[in-house]
Image (tube, rainbow over all chains, first blue to last red; front, side, top):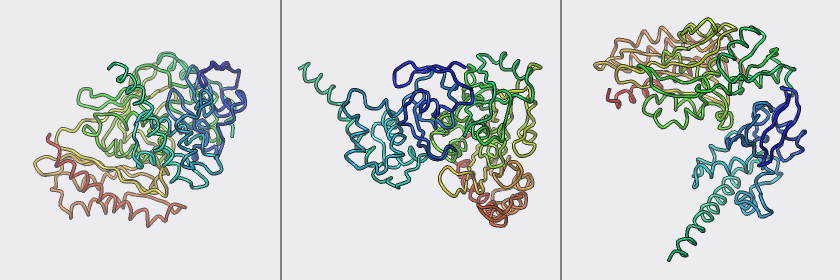
Length: 168
Length: 291
């Protein structure tokens, strides 16, 4: 059956069987291989994507369930060539080793910061509790999200400060 | 892993959904968030001819107070309960429980009603609903039917729902006096199914327990209502002795099996300990409430 959804801002569609999982639609039909398949049993979170802004495990969502929805994958994180704050955070704090869990962790981090601009360590740990890092690099992932949160807060304050300066 | 092939329909109205169920009967499987069903489809434990996705039905995701009960719409997700501003005061046991359910990503899609309908004896919500004395509201083309939660769970993964019925709402009676609840769960790792979990709910009147509900998770073929333990509480002042006796009776009601999560004897003892702990928390909460 026909399915169409907005993926990283672009309208994408395909003709698929209803049993096709969202992760397979993304990887196979759309050739966006940044979304990983780890356990394939809803346990590891390597396949995390955002559907209408909510992090979900795309191995446990049918592609047809995303009909008409907005999907964001790791490919949608960096817009124009410059690194997004969450990417800078992972880069600066060594938030990845093998990199397999990283797409999911980054999407979760970005979504958490959009909801809670200055998350505590505990809030970050809860937010990533459904995602497994096989390198066990959790300490640095938590630091990376903290780093990104500070950058995001600074960036959101900067234009406001500039505007205030301009008004004087 | 791929599910076996199935047809798929995402009806836009409840009327259309009920017609599909009437047409396909037992061959249809209802999907809300899909967080229990999709793993079952992938493992091919479930091989329905058609999946009826009710995820797009309007007006079924609400959480609201109505005529003396709390109504949880069939499409209210775990995360909606987690972030609801009124529930920590209105029904704190729901907020207790929701944090124990799988992980944040599953909670973003899975629903309370779907979890109850899945009727996994290791499911968390079933025990909480047993403790709270909830009812399940089901619709079919024939009309609406209200099923008490005690009559709802029949056997593992099997409920009293007929093939042409859709659950539209879970109703939780609002207590008449000071009340409190608690959910305690033992798990091997965060987000795991319970080794054992216990839901308790009490209502007080004049220093005595007026109502008591105890639900047990993962220690039988369904979520279990510990009736004898509940009876031992009602009408009594909540002394340590009364609590200990209720805990002993609840432990006797449990029918766990030895498995990788622990031995039956161990699980029975955890029931005893968690009933005691849960009752102390619930009673503490009830005493804080001004009715």
